[in-house]
Length: 208
Length: 312
Image (cartoon, rainbow over all chains, first blue to last red; front, top):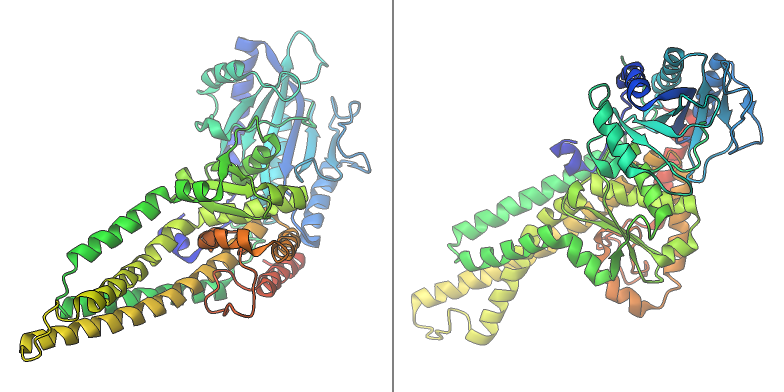
């Protein structure tokens, strides 16, 4: 922020950067070759719901365009059935424990998944809600056990335009060594977040 | 790609703040000119004032934390608090500040530190106990906005000449009291001595007046910056109503707390969420560091209404 902004005590809400998402297909190949990790073909978009009818309308617009059934009542548990394979996607009703909401997107292949996530994001942004976007999360699991839940996540920070790996290993624990290895591995394919302070953990992800 | 912004800008607040900053700058320019015209021995006072400025600027985080009994907490100690801050700074695109918790039952929070890299955000246990999670998040968003606006730097520099004028007033007053005006020389027949007395008396008056005006201006600026932080914080969480409810809760609790604790906290009001001194009749609104609760609530209500209309 500029000098004048500091002087006048105003901040423009940080705008989301969406272009870096398209580095993901390259990273996917690297992950598959070096770590034997394949995409679970599920991704989540996390945002802070803003007050007002205009925001609700934007949410409905996204839900309508993705042709996703609003998942009424069931707030946290991910739907294991429909979403894993087909085009199934869902909008979580209610917020997670920090007051953020998730749109979980599925796709038959990875390129389509990335395109769909980008579509969700750009719809938000075009409607003026770019500042409400927190992160997108893409799930990966070992290639040897298809259908298993994700073991590794790539988290995209909208405001920074950077990624970081997140490898949870049980209850509120994460594999820092594995994450740093992935950082080194993926640094050519993706813009990896250099500030490790910003690699915040995302427990209880709705993304499989 | 031209995208609409849903987050309205308050031009009136910006203009008022600009006016205050301008008047403050003008005041300082006049003050320095007067000092130069009067050939005052400035070196000593300047060194002293710069020393205070330096300490305030570079150690503000440590001083505030120490005086409030704030303890830096790790992610392991306060995982939830850290997680909330993590998400807010990711939304606002700013570096994560140090997170601290103060062992006091006064429900409040403050932010300090000269820039984003040295920032500290501190909440009290009283706040964590009394407010629910979205409200704590709203308070943190308000404090993070202080950090993003660089309020410590702005207010420290803004108060610099106030400190200078205050020091000058005191030094001259003591010199007058104990040494007598005119450097202790009470020989009234001495023309030069008489002139010196006049100059020193004049300086005393000018300094006192400058100090008074800059004090009012700085407090005015502080109130505007509170409103600006409320606004940015509310926009960051997207829900002005939650910040408003946190304000009501904290302000309501504040006036019920015994005054002794509050007076101890008084000096560090500047970047608090709510002032530790309850708004009493004795405290003129001109000297308050924080705007009246109703004014803050009104602003948040307006913002909420604008967001409901989907302001473009």
